[in-house]
Amino acid sequence: MAPSKEEKVAASSKAEMLSEFSIDLVTNAKLHRTFLQSLHQHKISWDNLVLQNEDFSFAVSMHRYTQLWLPMIYNANTQEMLACKKQTPLVPPSDVAWLWHCHRLAPYDYMRYIKSQEKERKLSIEDAAFVPFSFQHYDSNTGAIDVCNSDEEVCRETRRLWERLYPKERFFLNDESSSSLVSVTDVDKSLTPADCQNECVLLNGFDLYGSTLRQATFLWQVSSPAFEDNDFLQDAVVNYFRFLSLKKHCADTVGKERFIIVPTYQIDLMWHTHMLADCNGTAYRQDCRRILGKTLDHDDSLNDRSEGSDLNRAFDATKKLWLEVYGVEYFVRGGMYRGEPPAGYYRSDWKAAEASILCNHHHSDVVGNAHLVDKAGASSTSPPSESTSVESRPRWITPGETSSTGKPGFIPMKEKSTTRGVNNNEQMKEYIFGDGPAGVGYYHMHTKEAYGLAITRFEKRIKDRECFLCASLIILPCLLFGICVYFELKDLKASLEVFRNQLNAPAPLDALPAEGVGAESKKKKSADAYWAAAACGAALYNHDCGGGTCGGADGGGACGGAACGGGGCGGG
Image 1 (cartoon, rainbow, N blue to C red):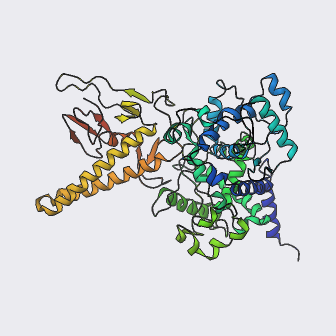
Image 2: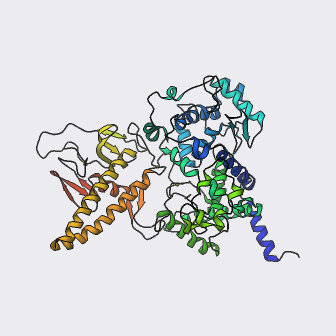
Image 3: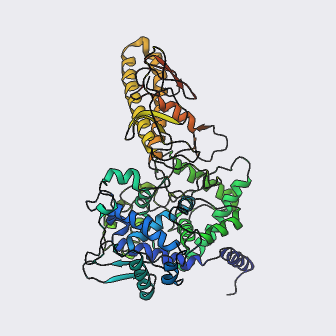
């Protein structure tokens, strides 16, 4: 039977949306899934790169990725590179491929890191020859080399170039037979797991280790039977185009510039594929700018799916807006959240085909969030600050670095004043005073050390106020004040949750929503308000702390004498 007029119009519209992208997303999405499945089979994405491994494999891989692979793939300035490379595409070893993959899923952070290394390592931001979704892996049991999405000759050329540039470095991390060997002690003889977590994983403020943990389960979410269907993947491209257009609609709508949208996993596969299809995400940036006028940033750090969480509220808001704009429900069978992976997922012999119907028909086998299966979206979001320039966006820094605004990560305390009533270490905006790895002093709000101090302060204040609340319920005259303390506790706990969640995020907070995500009329609480509250362990009320007055939620004042909540704003 001949197609109806409506079907012809729909087919024409679909073809137009598919042609909006400069690369074949369907073909690349298939390569993408093969890439993830192969890494999973070799335990690279979920077992080999564990931070606390005795062999420090993650630290070694970070060294290989940042100091060997990236200079090798980008640096085409030396005669030696030009002689060896000959514009041959390069295929990374498996451990490096996984880190590179996760790093490029944060396009702003990735490009900021590359730019920061331009002078130091002479990295060029131009796209190098690149085989998308490819890697090569050495099997230490058989001695064979497994090649994913490339050919053996290209892989051999990559290994030859590596050996010529880095004769003392083995190409495969697990190749014990290689005569070229640099151990972790050669990378840093004093390296410890804590050092790795605090220093090595931060690339210009981006927490790459945290990203690898979050991305380890992405394969599970895109392994339903639907992802094997070509029509489903074409529909995914269409919905991805609508997703980008929806973001533009938000930007063009008054009051919704900071609206966070959340994709389904059907859309998320195409979003990831688009970002990763070339070396620097050039096609992604150009397509985004043409479709919505700017590059859409990507954030995978919102993982809390509890009722009322930021991620769930953002997804509900996206569903509502999708229905308003497109007139259809924001749902695709086989392309929604599948729950958390079962134990069997974390095995090298797990295969997507064997477990593909698990979530759709046996929710009891899902480890967590079974009630959200087929009802929730992905954990990827479009952060509300992607319009900010790469250089000015906040980033994690170490105490020895400077912030994006040029402020030091750590300022040592001044000598205590001997004059009564004089505080030489008064409260400083954007800093929290306390004892940390760099010593006693001020830690900038873009350091993880400051977050640790803030969390400790809030925990102590919550414990103190809970004790007071219990006492007020016993002593009747204090009952009314106890009610006030009850609501104060809610604010303290909400602020504590903000700091705990943000500590694991790719970047520090800048401005946070007090209630809701993407809500046009909700009052926003600035980062300054949170930090002023954390500085003395006092939130939303004035608190006397040992001889000085601690400013309330909007800052001001200084803590004299003893530390407020342990550590204080100033050291007296």
